[in-house]
Length: 111
Image 1 (cartoon, rainbow, N blue to C red):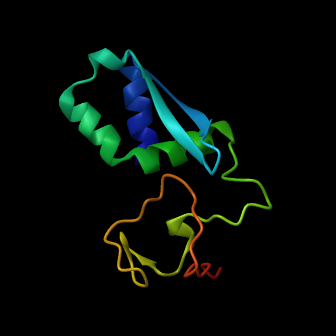
Image 2: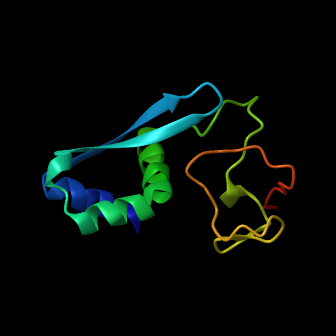
């Protein structure tokens, strides 16, 4: 579970936060880890590979909303076309779920 990983990072003396960045077209989230220069290569690889999950967990922790109500962008995990890490419509082998995007094949999950 990613929340446990975040707690482990903090327990070993690192601070981990997110910073929202507006590039003019969408919001992205940067991971801020201090002291960054003390991370090992394997720790950096893990953080890179799990950034979407870590950002999601940190956003939940801080009560950050995914987007404004009028925003029509969506996350891949909100779409019924995503099976595992593969979109069955676009045939992409991995979802880029670290930021919302506009997708003309989006089909919302049913509750």
